[in-house]
Length: 599
Image 1 (tube, one colour):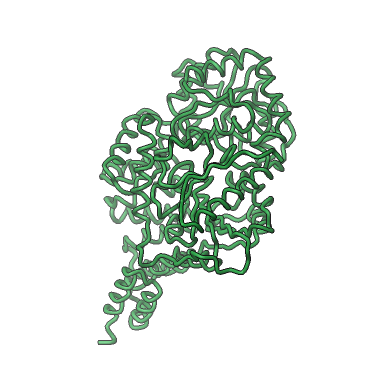
Image 2 (cartoon, helix red, strand yellow):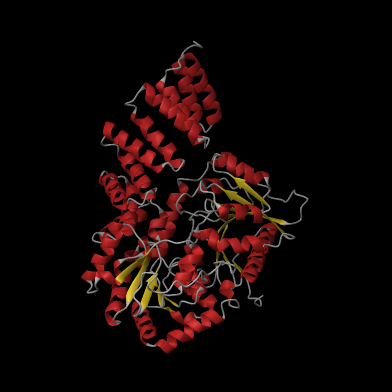
């Protein structure tokens, strides 16, 4: 019966289930040639296009299916997925809401809706959607409840919510975002174990079957003697990762290294063009399937592929899971282990963030930079100092600051910050502008701790140069815990603002100490909250001590390890060569680079 459209549809479904979306498309085309108004065929053709990373074609298929069958719930959901992939978040929200009108108990759609609401920073609505999904025992939503509540600084149920997620991780529940575990402050005694377990289980769900692994070049075939380094990320745009990495891309020794950029992000701007200019080749992978993207990387005979995203928002670890290069490296974007050896062979750290004693906390082999794992661009411009009044600050009084995202704040950290403001008259806490709900929650939390809400000053978002210019007005930066400041910390140190940090037991909770060590002021990293409070209070009262540290930061800015972009890049290249030399010998051992002179 060659004219049976349903048989061709089912054949396509089987091909899609077997990982053959192109063959599936052919079957769906036949089905639609036989029956052009077949809603299921249009819908499944959309699914095949989605699998092929062609969301625009998928969206057209879903819209056609819905024009034929407006109550097709799964088509509304799939349409929302395609729109979300294209960053059409408002449209995706509408599609998910349409699905929920048709099927109010559709648990996973509440979770999908939560993600697109989060993407629009509608944190309160997102929290409601995730709580609805979590109430129906949808495990992945529980982690997002923690994350959204953290973004809102809604802390009433924090301990219970974190315990729920920690219990799920310990039980091996799949699809709990490891990123959430980085900022859970109530589980610090067991944080490293939980982070590795969460990463392992999350990774296992995303590993490609061994039968379809890309056959990466294990022995160099290229005539080019240079080592080929690939950087894989969605963040080659005006983003914290590029603010840090741009100097390294510009300073790589092109006589010894061929640098390839691989971008799957949907945002493109001046920073994207800068990366395109500084990399020897720059490929846009966003519309390729995971297999096609991995095959393109393998086709370039990249020797070392560096994943700059890990498990951060918008990551596609499925590309790395296909092993498109002989060596995979986890670096910079995600401050923790990826949990599975198929995703990365090495993690780049340093003696502070990844001490040798913590090697068991990582699925990757440690590769230690001699000074600091974090790169910095010494060419970044500091804008003009606008003056306190123009920046919205009181003309007199001590200015504490923390320009971190709100999910890094928590009750324990805020307790100490408010205690400092109570002890230091006329002091203020300068934070990055948040939504009205976050602002209201933080001011309420401050007042509950005996601090007037008006002493929290919220700064509008600015371009990097202008932000660095106004940042000079701060007296002292206060680090977050257990997820430390990263780019925000190096920004403060770059403009001469001291930072007080608390060291923990995980990568994310030791970043501040690493940066301070490389900046030449290790005395600002402490081991307890009592010491954190005492040091911050001392610096706020003792203007001479504070001025001395500020002067040291300013005078050593271009000579300290933290901002030695050229020296960092040479060290990074030595690290790559050491990894590659081990690979050629068929071994993999911890790499510890020795310090060399500053350039």
